[in-house]
Length: 630
Ligand SMILES: *[C@@H]1O[C@H](CO)[C@@H](O)[C@H](O)[C@H]1NC(C)=O
Ligand SMILES: *[C@@H]1O[C@H](CO)[C@@H](O)[C@H](O)[C@H]1NC(C)=O
Ligand SMILES: *[C@@H]1O[C@H](CO)[C@@H](O)[C@H](O)[C@H]1NC(C)=O
Ligand SMILES: *[C@@H]1O[C@H](CO)[C@@H](O)[C@H](O)[C@H]1NC(C)=O
Ligand SMILES: *[C@@H]1O[C@H](CO)[C@@H](O)[C@H](O)[C@H]1NC(C)=O
Ligand SMILES: *[C@@H]1O[C@H](CO)[C@@H](O)[C@H](O)[C@H]1NC(C)=O
Ligand SMILES: *[C@@H]1O[C@H](CO)[C@@H](O)[C@H](O)[C@H]1NC(C)=O
Ligand SMILES: *[C@@H]1O[C@H](CO)[C@@H](O)[C@H](O)[C@H]1NC(C)=O
Ligand SMILES: *[C@@H]1O[C@H](CO)[C@@H](O)[C@H](O)[C@H]1NC(C)=O
Ligand SMILES: *[C@@H]1O[C@H](CO)[C@@H](O)[C@H](O)[C@H]1NC(C)=O
Ligand SMILES: *[C@@H]1O[C@H](CO)[C@@H](O)[C@H](O)[C@H]1NC(C)=O
Ligand SMILES: *[C@@H]1O[C@H](CO)[C@@H](O)[C@H](O)[C@H]1NC(C)=O
Ligand SMILES: [Cu+2]
Image 1 (cartoon, rainbow, N blue to C red):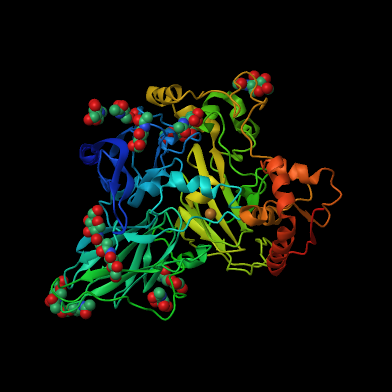
Image 2 (image 1 turned 180 degrees about the vertical axis):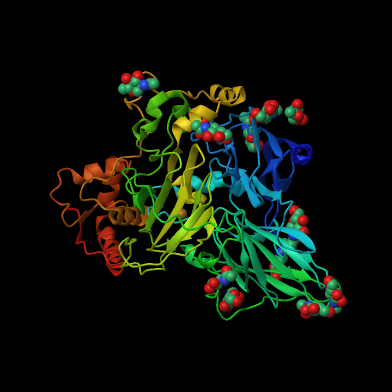
């Protein structure tokens, strides 16, 4: 009797599990989401925006993704999914798959057995998602713990007028030595400005807020309504009511919003840029975007709603998961990484974990895992610039992240949600504080869990997770600009477990062959000797000794103001380096003859202007002595 009940329940569940097939081809079209400029956007089967997807827990998803671009590779990542046993479907190029070449089709085939809630999908290639290749991915819960009347998805993002392909070369340039990120033109809600949400009175809405942006965090607040947070990043939490949310890119907040009984008035739903993340704030940038909660379409629309302070946003650190998971008391393996932004030999500003800026290997890291046999447990074979850590099956891993940068960064771990053990407050620029493990501290009993967590400026966070999901998982800043700068590392979790349980599909291998990328061998593509990394991809060399990042800034200042020509600046301590001038010019790929000619013509003018550069620099606190040459 008992057996038959069990088996019919089993068959009922199996019968209900559906397979959803999507046949998507990328391409270009035009759209005008912010109402101010029609521009090229990435389309899905010729349509923009990309669809929001909805499946049930336990379903299978099969996405045939055809690269319809003629001149660029692509890939697709399903953000927040664990991909148990299917790390090859996770999406990041040269980590868990090869880039999909133009004209080629990859089948993303996976199930969603053990997760519910608000997720999203996006291209994981070259910032493509900021041009529109992204959408919501919702997994319905048959056992939803909260009551509500209706469900609504709201996607949020920033929007640029220029294409990523135009912005990236300007961003990753000698002439942008401080790594200033491009400034977006607008904030969008549901891919539009001034979004109208028509509500019914006296109803509770389950609202999935998903930030599908690539750079800026947003504050969210509503006129005379409150959010009750019930889930973050696919993890239910004890309800927490707040009037203000702070949502970084890639984060999700599921909230309950109860509408009023009275329908006579409409209300504002505000999005506000976290303008501390912007290097400059153009005069015409609308920092506060007004959207509408509409009860009566014939009534007036509200103007901007102002608040006294944005400081009282809900601090996600204090949320308590509904499903209690005790703090992992101790860790087995600790990874400590310092976030640094700095210039290399080519003058470009890169981002680093410790002294490593991520550069992709020649063989996708998963290919190395699956071809290396027993040597897959040795991190060395994955190459220097993939910054790979090998994790043992089921060990408790702690990541300590010290932010030596003055900005906030939202970090994302693929394949897991992690416990948030500690997050430091903002510290001043001149006194950053790393994590001090021996300082007395009582961590939360049931720490918050999520898959994207921001770190405060000049501060730190500490997270823990159990290495119970064999796979190759990327850990990176979700600001696309910073990922381009290399703010990423690779976790190879239980490599022998991956070998035991995962077989590459023929399609996966074909994708590699069609783009001419080997899928066996070490990071350098050597499949004879896994310990010979000759020819691996590495980051540019360091700046010459004595030459500082600030020196690059000063040099570029003097080079880009055309009147001046190029003037070489000698820093204190640099004057006695032989051929400094030649080396710096060569290092920065500046044509020496042009430089010398300009220098002769402009020497006097330069000296004056140099003075002001020096003043500007000394105002910024440099202690170096600066003199011009000759
Ligand atoms: C996907 O669509 C393309 C173009 O419409 C078609 O040629 C292809 O057969 C379809 N593939 C699948 C698996 O349905
Ligand atoms: C949104 O409203 C602003 C003024 O509040 C207006 O300037 C703008 O044109 C509107 N945009 C759209 C897309 O309707
Ligand atoms: C490639 O696609 C772009 C954008 O659609 C188009 O402008 C360009 O002409 C195409 N190039 C070729 C060689 O087809
Ligand atoms: C596509 O990826 C391959 C392999 O990484 C690379 O060699 C090629 O340059 C890429 N194509 C483009 C257009 O970026
Ligand atoms: C997707 O994967 C499942 C499990 O491996 C397999 O049975 C199914 O045939 C795959 N789908 C396609 C279209 O290959
Ligand atoms: C946002 O768009 C989705 C469809 O993509 C729609 O279901 C939802 O109601 C919209 N929400 C608002 C607030 O406009
Ligand atoms: C609000 O809804 C509840 C039931 O959901 C109902 O009992 C109540 O009368 C409604 N109030 C108004 C003012 O519509
Ligand atoms: C609407 O009315 C119901 C009862 O009629 C009450 O319980 C509820 O609190 C009211 N809602 C609001 C937002 O005032
Ligand atoms: C934006 O909103 C904030 C908070 O309500 C307010 O202090 C600020 O003045 C607003 N800025 C503009 C330009 O309206
Ligand atoms: C709600 O959030 C606040 C911090 O914003 C925190 O102090 C409080 O403990 C939280 N309560 C619950 C039940 O999560
Ligand atoms: C692992 O590396 C060692 C040392 O290079 C080599 O002797 C051995 O054959 C390798 N094992 C496999 C399975 O490739
Ligand atoms: C392989 O997967 C099965 C089922 O998910 C699991 O029970 C087993 O432990 C895995 N084996 C390894 C070596 O990870
Ligand atoms: Cu970042």
